[in-house]
Image (cartoon, rainbow, N blue to C red):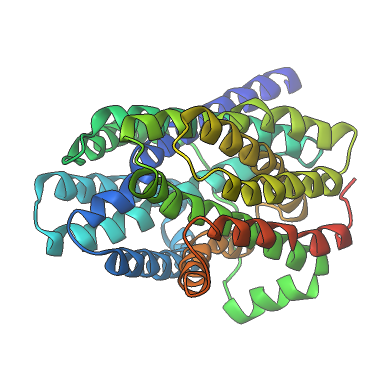
Length: 390
């Protein structure tokens, strides 16, 4: 009986990995081209404003998820969100009006984050504490495989003047995603979700110093991702003159560490090392390599591929340790704390544009990488003060 239960649980985890892959591929295909797509309709300031609105809408969505799960359950919420995303993306690919595309784009980028949240709940329910690192590492490897493929495939679907192909491809992926969620989780049973209180949840997080620290560390990591997603492709294309197909190759190489090292590091954190040591090393690598980008203001595909690859070695190590640490601290009965944890991502889309806007008063585009490197270095203070879970 126990043997069959183990097989069933393993099959469920593989199912979640496949669902995560399709969800991430839908998101990753257009991500590094979104800001350039929007800039064909409007100026850079408006693009920045759109990202701020996306952050605001997504945060409201995350804070509403506890109520939604209580009312309709995680499976139904997931299916409804995917159907809504299908409608949104159909509107994006069939319209040429910015007044239509802008609100749909805002909704679409927010909804995909909420779909990711529902997948998190599926995964959280099927994770046991002793193997948290290995399970999170496996799931994140599946997701990050999609992130590696996304820029490469996305670059093939667009031309210098037409971005619609990449959104058509992302739209097509939603149909297998809808089927896979229903097929894998039609027997999913929700836990009893406690009533959400924003003030109470924030108080619980602040009361636990280690949770507070891991939240602050994650905000910096998510700010790093937001910064890189919005500004790096624009810098490479507009300032250095890389073509979109070249940028697709650079980003594909850049993202390989997420596939190669997260699963092994997750298992290592479970069995041998604590999360704190790997987390510190990850941010040190991020800080040094990101700051070093100011030394290479030249158009060299190999140079930028290698250095951005090194930045992601650090980011991948940091990401899997943050996820492992958090999910060892929080169980499946706390969707409200998970909501707050996922809020750090849209919050970073507020923080990154603000830092860039202020930074440009004092320096050039290139030297913004030095500011980002310095921000990564600041995480060592909270990292060295957290207590390992092992």
